[in-house]
Image 1 (cartoon, rainbow over the protein chains, first blue to last red):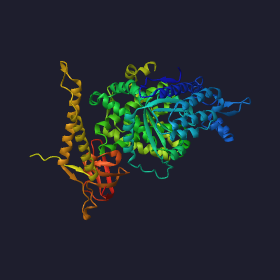
Image 2: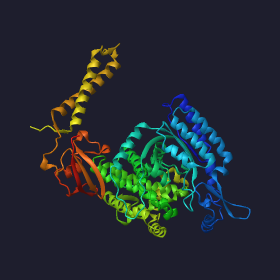
Image 3: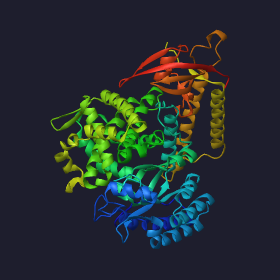
Image 4: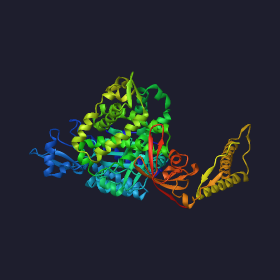
Length: 455
Length: 159
């Protein structure tokens, strides 16, 4: 089914009642995908949420009169007089949202965990009345339950014009206790160091950060398209500041991406010496840590004005900075004997492999372009500094130089996210975003990565 | 003669090791008090006996390890008055590492847990700052990159 990805998940830890609850949530999640497809407006690629003929200027002008035009939770349409009007999601999709709310209330009745039950009822209300903040707060205040569940208009990546409007998505997963403990330990080590605040910037301090690792059962809506391996919510900095943020690692999609993309890329792109140095187990752990470090870092790089200032360039800088800041933090972890040198090396290698993955993904799904641009910036930066080089069809990596580059690039990203203007961000992206660094490897990659077969 | 490795422990660390040793001894006693499984079952080795033996070996090994630790421990003590400005085991350090502030306690390897701000004296940072004073900056060399660490504050407390 379009907009849905199902994964095999072991439910034997769940009681009969919890299994019923789980199935009800999966059914609710499935129903969100068609709404996402309509938000995506596939007939006119790139014009998601807005009429295909509307220009940025026209939308901005209309938003001056009616701020709801740029509200994260409205659709923009033309009325009979050809004027732009905002229609809230909960009104536009009222008919489709009702059965989802019914399922959520049924699930709430099945839950013996009162907090979770309260969250589900609040979520059902939010979908119908458009007050999404109250359900986000309820979610943040719900202690970890065996079943992980999120639904609603959440991520802004589909809004290519303003990075404001939220696309529908849902996921259901089952808590992986062992991996969650491991992730939590890692988080506490990372958070032990206090990052220096950039003078003049409007840094937001996140009050608390909880972390869970799930075995995913279903992705629906945007998350199925993007195949996230982790997420850090809420996106609203004010909510995050007051109620903290919650991070989820999707182990199932991470394993899938590791086996289908990261590993084949590793064996295709990197020179033999590197290939022989790291075992698949080491690389798999590094891949997990890469995403874990990335999501933890998201909580450390929030600036109150960054989204507004950088507009559609915000996700490029935000995602890249989160990736490299996490790796930078590993330097201190080595000093504390929390990880070994070889483990850090494997993390850097997987970071480079992931850059290739994002570029390949963007060829098939242009909506992930901001990740691909960020990846290209990193690769070009390393290339320019002589930290990586291509020779005879293979990538040679000077790991020490890459690590120094990561430190330097972190400072640059922090500066752009914390202080720089839209125009300066545009210039920086233009200078570093060339995909030629990846393109050289495309003929080889086509043979090994299934997804690129039709590129 | 090879000198045996010393294990540095705080008072609470020592109490924890002793408690673990007692608990393991009790467990071994409880396991052997009842009737042990027979070695043979029909003509084959009894799987219950094998499992029992495996458990006992594991417990015995850990009890021996703990005994060796207790034999070679050195209790971390508060330094003398004049030495409190020098980094030693048991010190809580506030340091600036590559421009980021960090606070941690230097402990022996057995009690090290970076997630709880307890760093081993044998870790790269532990080795580098032992014996250093407030205000000193040390460069810690690692195969990938050199780190700088400036000691901002040294604090000693009983716990």
